[in-house]
Image 1 (cartoon, rainbow, N blue to C red):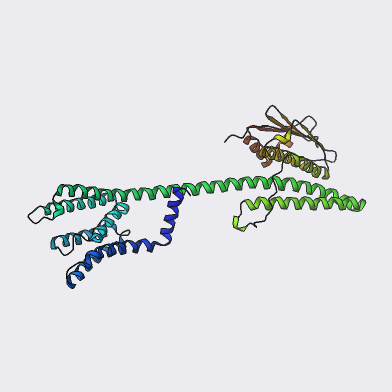
Image 2: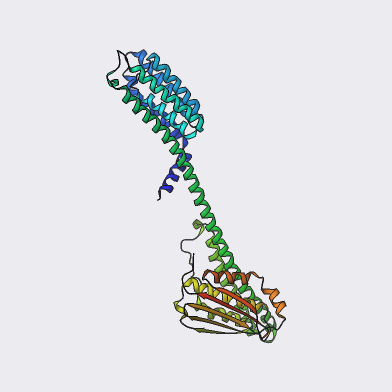
Length: 401
């Protein structure tokens, strides 16, 4: 656990149980002053000193809400007892209560009020030290100037500690806010990734299922057996899409809601191109696959990017496929570069009409974003055969930050 996390946990515990610190500090001051109170001569002396100790410590319950008022009360009582001698000068609890009041002025009061409190404390300190000069000065006051120096250092340190505590709280709050913002940003980025994956899965699978359903509708009467096989292929495609969707949706769900024995299938790679192409063939168009170079050495992330680019290109082919449409897929790995080419033969239509239907689609944007991760690019457009061509070029080097 980092220091920031530890401090944040302490702040959380303090905010969860604020009464512990609120009551603990005054009670500690009273306990610290009890030896002096019990050492007072006579019952009347004990009662008087106990009452004065409580008068100095009880206001500390409001030290955070009214820091300046609490400081004024403790200072007034301290001045009164100093001149009347009603309180033993060795009462450590009373001295600590005054320092706690000054500390909270440093934490919560405005700079102007803090300067006033500091000036009052130093003036009171000097007056107390000057009062020690005389014929009846105590033994510890042989060097009053040393006492003034030590007292000044103590008062200044308490004020500085209060200011430092205020600064630390501000820094912790800022860091915690930044940490929360980073967490929300990470969640947003992950959800955006899941959205793209869902688009790829649903777009491709639905295009395949629509093509298969059209074919099955014509086969149910003429060739019932082939129609049944086509319907089973549709069901398998739907089940596969549902499985992938559940896995992707689990990413943005709560970890506590996931079963501990849930199976998480690996992301698809180039070895999954053959099943992908088989599903497209089952929907009607003929598709050929060719590879050059050692595609098995590519990083899993790069394989996923290539797979999704091919999947999106074939989905686009299925959307506009005719009865005689054929398509070819080629993946080439050479000299630190991966080239992906997907071409189909039609149906024939004007290049302008084809560009309007696909060029501004989300699929092409998704392909370009995936290629950009690997410092690559994607070009798409009509080809000489009246169909559509997609070419992607990606680098095999690790993606840039």
